[in-house]
Image (cartoon, rainbow, N blue to C red; front, side):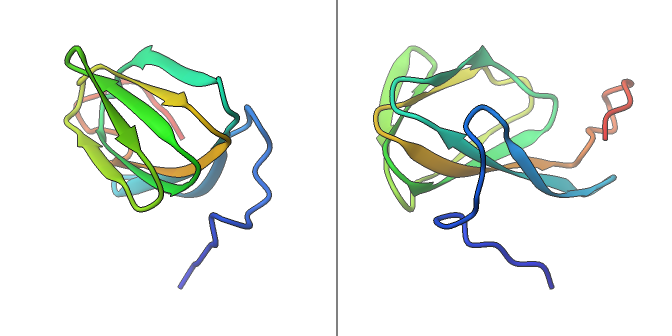
Length: 109
């Protein structure tokens, strides 16, 4: 078993930490996003799940905005565009599955 405590994990700002990456299964990434920073409008090839551990985020999707605090979980289908904004210093987990998407012909590890 692998385990992590996202609230105490030493994740550098602007340097997401890959906690685990299993080819054909999933990738787990811890992100430390300071207040005022954001993950600009983007999409990924996989299903993506975001789990807020600490702080407050705004999730922008389909022209709307949702507030997201500790315990908030979001899911996006592959290629759904979204933006994540930190309204306070925030830490969250991003899960991508399957990793890499079998329909994506590029090689990523």
